[in-house]
Length: 159
Image (tube, rainbow, N blue to C red; front, side, top):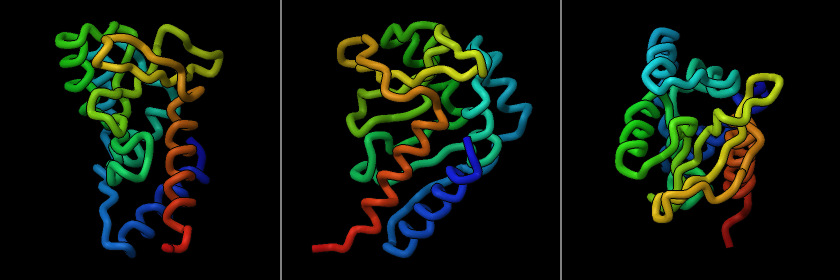
C-alpha cells in the first residue's frame, strides 16, 4: 500500500463527509492484534494488508459506491473462521473484503504468494461455495482501485 493510496482514502473520506455520507475507518490495529489474527488463521498476512491494518484497521463505505464496500480489518479472523465452518472456505483463504452482494467475499489466496510476499485477491461466492475468479493482484491494488473508482464517481457532477 502506497502513500498515494493513503491519500486517496483520506480524499474519499473527506468527500463522503462533505456529502453527508459515511466512510467508517476503524483506526489502526496494534501489532499484537495483527499477530494474533495471523496465528488464529494460520496464515501470515501480506505486506499490503499488514500496512492497511496498521494504518486504517478497517474501512467501510456505502454499499452502492464500490464493488467492495467493506475492507475487513482484524475481525477477518471471526469472518474467516465462520466462513470456513459454515461455507467450507478453504484454510488458505482469508476474507478481507465484502462485496455488494452479502454472499460475495473478497479473499486473500495464501496458496499463491508472490516473491514479495503478496497474495492475489479472489472472489469467493458463498452461494456456490467456490472461488469465482481472481480480481486483484494483491490487497493494495484492490484498495487503490476501489477507492480510485469511488473518488472518480463522487467527483462527477450530479445530473
